Amino acid sequence: MILVVGLIIGLVLGLTGAGGSVFAVPLLILLAKLPVNEAIGLALGAVSISALYGSISNWRAHNILWSPALVLGGTGTLFAPLGKLLGNELPAMVLLAGFNFLAIFIALGMWRNSVLRPEHARVVRSGILLEASNSEAICRLSSNGQFEWKFPCVSRLAFFGMVIGLTAGLFGVGGGFMIVPLLIFLTQISMQQAVATSLVIITGTSAAGFFGYISTTTDFHWQSLAMIAAGGLLGMSVGHLISNKVAGPALQRFFAASLLGVVLLTLITQLKSTL
Image 1 (cartoon, rainbow, N blue to C red):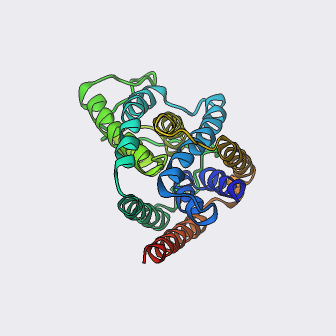
Image 2: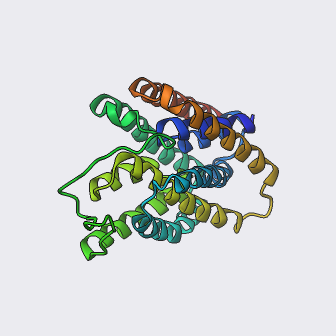
Image 3: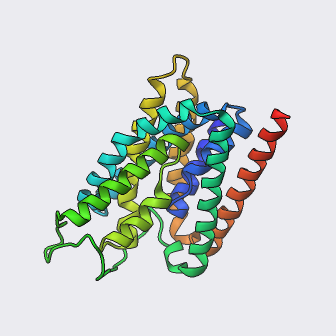
């Protein structure tokens, strides 16, 4: 079952551009019967490996904008372990309730994006580079395409990197649902560059949160991580092969509805077990 969970993570991450990692925690709770904290720790490790695989592919295609990735990813990496430590101190039901609220927000955002911006739903992490420009962006690129290091831009990137890191560590999500729209709002980069850059950030923040988790536990199941990571890499590979043929608004809505269903089922199951 853990291998299947990894496959779903990689496939959704590869096909939709965001939201794949948020499937991991409820599926690990439902299918693998893991406690919330253990599911979050395992999800962080699996997401970081899948995101690293996608980042290597995007690096070869020259789709990554490294400067904002370093600022967002650097601050996110610093704060992700803090988020995981905070999560360790929270009651399981409080943590689960917070995760469910976040997952519902992500699902509704995916659905809304597929309706209002259907062209974005066709851009996936393994797709073709698209041209785009935002003349009102706070973070600007110079005439030769280089990132301009100015305080208004860097300070905002650092602040949101902190929020992303805390969220990643606390709930075990990669943060692509926040990173992609944030990069598009703050910068002049294309949608494809945003999703490619987000994978680098997800790699760092998820890995930092994962190491924060294993530093506080003595019985981590490395075999489970290997199995879920193998499934994730396979899912990403399949997504890479079929993304440009099947990606679109209908697929985004399908995954949004599936996420809502999984989250609600997880919440109901957990509530029944406590009664």
